[in-house]
Length: 125
Image (cartoon, rainbow, N blue to C red; front, top):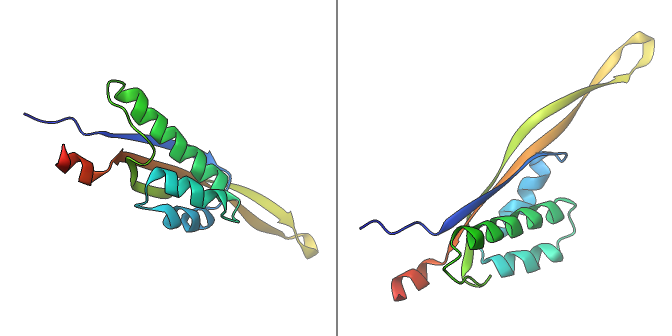
């Protein structure tokens, strides 16, 4: 009756990078095949590219682990959803002139990736 949804999820929490910067990298790979996304991230000159690639690899591994009877290649998998949420903000102070203190917000982010099987192949089977 109900076919199982072939998708898996991976989450990286409390990453010490600002979500605004990580979103730039996440937007570049949204909706792409896993192998093409990883290849693109390999040549992206952003520090967050390594972290996003690690979460994508983890989501793909979770899918292979969850459905062991199925065989998945990276070409068969597509990034269904990827989003970056804001995590906790570490509040620090910077001494300022005349005894004042300026606040510094060190932002963190949570990366969530959902990987699924490509839709065209589901129709052909």
